[in-house]
Length: 355
Ligand code: TXA
Ligand code: MG
Image (cartoon, rainbow, N blue to C red; front, side, top):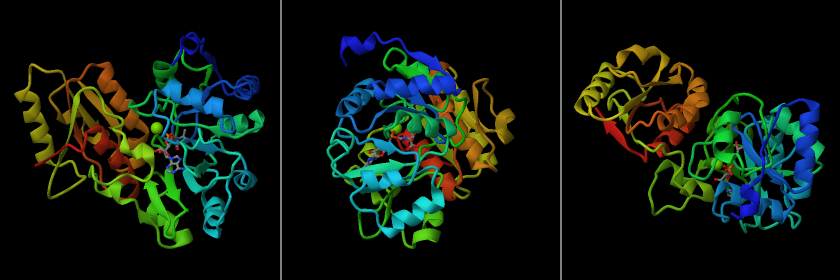
């Protein structure tokens, strides 16, 4: 990135009307504004401006072949951006928008190649967070927004996380408090004969199938294999990895459950490396079970949404305390749990210790 953008003074804004007006002015004049959505914080710029998209890549330190999601505030906008809008897209929009679902469709020329990383398709999403909807409407354009983290770090779920990564690199941050869901939107590709999930999220396969029938999951997500190339370019990059070495400890006979076996193995791993700074990622039920003071809380196992909403903050905390070794309980792979586990496995570089 150039020196000019490093010197930017990043404004911290609220979600009141004056703040959103200011943020919308910045977007219109080609600036970058981070804003809350119901999933994670986004790093927004004018989606119809090639220059704004280039600035987004520079601020994130992200490869420019990795396309951006275009955020809209009403369904009519889809017809301005997409060359074809099949019935299945209409049905999904009706069922899940505004909300955490991104739909991939063939793009119209109005969408610059810079925004779609050179692809002839465009990813579109209508977020449900009121601040994002206000911002899009007032900007009088569509907003391209990747997650507002620097490339390779966990997606931000609070304005403080955005400040850690983006201060001095963008014009403003809208602080809307902690987000609700905590992991990124589900991505569905409707440009192929059989619709395909390219990234799992809060809207699950069975929720989608209830509306449009058979949906497949991109094989490269189910089976992390370097030979399979994920259809969402962003899924190929290592993501979310904390600096310390993260290992998931799982009971082979009770996957996703925190059994005595899991607890005693983690405790023996702790005592084996007493010279190292060790952190344990655990759920409410088990905070007292481990022999270390570095307990990082994920949420409650009975409710995976609480785990999702804490996951990225927990991974950032591992870095803040300087953890060298991190052990985590595993998460049940029921539908939404599977989406959360997908992120945890990526953070662990797929490292699972079976007991
Ligand atoms: O929840 C979310 O979706 C958040 C909030 C801010 O809306 N955004 C987000 O954006 O997660 P980002 O840029 O971090 O992830 C976008 C993903 C990447 O994996 C990218 O490769 C994929 O979407 N993607 C975007 N456009 C695509 C396209 N035309 N075809 C295939 N994949 C696409
Ligand atoms: Mg991201």
